[in-house]
Length: 174
Image 1 (spheres, rainbow, N blue to C red):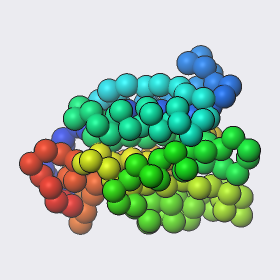
Image 2: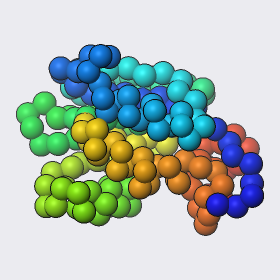
Image 3: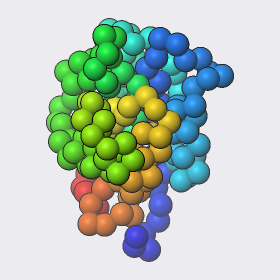
Image 4: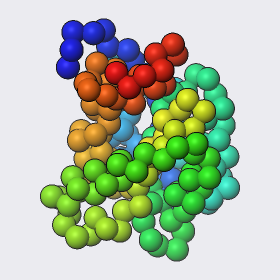
């Protein structure tokens, strides 16, 4: 990290689940705890059923909102019948962050072995908003935040980061 000033980001968290409630949403809570611990601001947290159109509606609304710089979803990235987060989000992205899923699966391999191939997590940019879709497990959320997002959402991280792509007036990697 350089001596530059930290710039907190405005982050929205979406839990995709047919069963979780605010009381049982440990994955969403873990993300909120980490983003706030790192000095970022939670703009909004929601839970939505695993339905392509409901997911897409919430994320599209946040992408259009100038007050949201980062969107993190948790859940719906596997292969079961209702897992549909990638299908909901991919069409909204202007650019895909191919390395995000690759790096996540690399880190996850150390924790869950070959089961990591069943993660369809993804990242991308849309309307100057960075979007990350994570698996629904609390462990996966911790892995993604601690191993990738903690640094990539910090404008001081060198040689490059995603924070500087969403900070107004910055428009560069770092």
